Amino acid sequence: MLTRFQDWPVRLDAAIAAARAVPFGYGPGQSHCCLFSSGVVQAITGTDVYAWFRGRYRCERGAYVALRRFAGGDVPEAVARIAAECGAPEIPLALAGRGDVVLFDTPEGPAMGICLGAHLVSVTRPHGLGFLPMSAATRAWKV
Image (cartoon, rainbow, N blue to C red; front, top):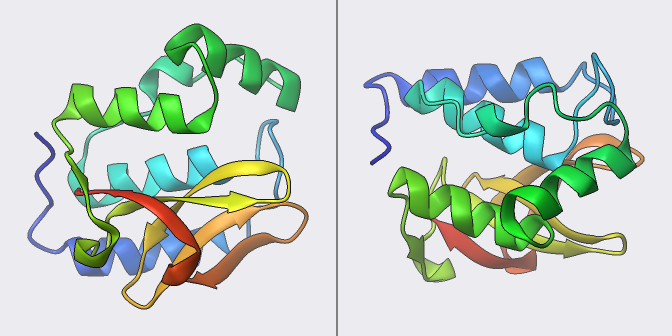
């Protein structure tokens, strides 16, 4: 079960602020939706839900190979497996709150983000950190 630190709102804001300077990508010093979202979860809970993936890829193709090895599919399958292993239940979108993990669709496929209330934040290509309305979300998990 994931437990948030008492000061998780401050940690959430700091994680988002730090992500603003990180470019989109799959290599060292870069970030993508899964790395960003799991980094926020780690910042607010102390749990590295992305540990299995660290050091297993250096490019986009490698990241997708790792996703298939881990969960037999793409981002949605990996998020569902990680959430189940961490005791983070899937919740109705209407119950998603600040700091919860959300899934949404992009032209490139499903992506992860973090709920901020009426909006979600994620790292998407080519822009890096961006904000979307929560109405774009398709699934959510309680952190």
